[in-house]
Length: 250
Ligand SMILES: Cc1ncc(C[n+]2csc(CCOP(=O)(O)OP(=O)(O)O)c2C)c(N)n1
Ligand code: SF4
Image (cartoon, rainbow, N blue to C red; front, side, top):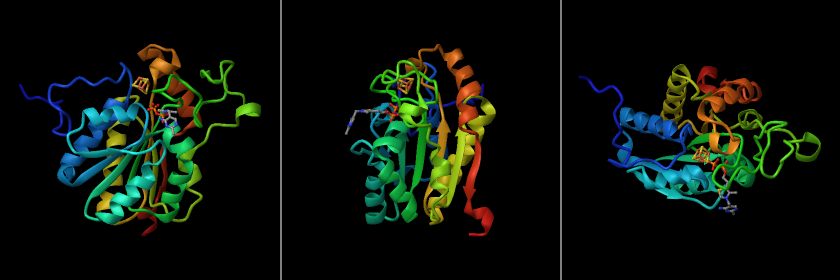
């Protein structure tokens, strides 16, 4: 029988990941691996991991990777890409990493139009450290640091990183996707592929924001977490292309 869902060579053999059931980090790394194999870039890619559950991947992936101080992935990726321009460099960051402690580095790399690919996994909460409020936590959503739910008067509003970066001149490609159903998984893969291809073509900064779930820190089972994602997260973070300069003839 033909095997239609095989492990990519970008994953360690026989290893079971430590991501919780219903977490989409594993799905996203699988898609990145498929894209790398299809583009033939496994041997020249470096992943710059943020700090958080995403960083667990350092145990699982077979290609070059490094971790960066919390939030500094875009700065580290800038250094690697500038010093080894033939390498394909991507960051993999959570919302706490990319949009909170790393906001300045993210904005600055985007503003410089660095020729890197950014994979931003937005699960609306700090996963690894136990569910603190993130910049993307929804209004009313509970977090350990906001036990009554996010209150805009005290905590401000959720931040929309694609739209914020869209205020800058330099970024080449910004798209928001999700992995909540097979059609969106396929769209996420296409967006990731485009973001890598843009780098190979020297186009500059590309970011794919992927809206995902964290059942563990949302306090929901896997099915309830999918419902929450669809009924709440996707209302706050609408999916689609926010900027694609290739459509503008750039
Ligand atoms: C300078 C510094 N501050 C705080 C921490 C603690 N810390 C580790 S992971 C993390 C949050 C990660 O959340 P997120 O980026 O949303 O990723 P997720 O775990 O949800 O994938 C924090 C605050 C740290 N490692 N370094
Ligand atoms: S705590 Fe959340 S983000 Fe971390 S592995 Fe579990 S479900 Fe995924």
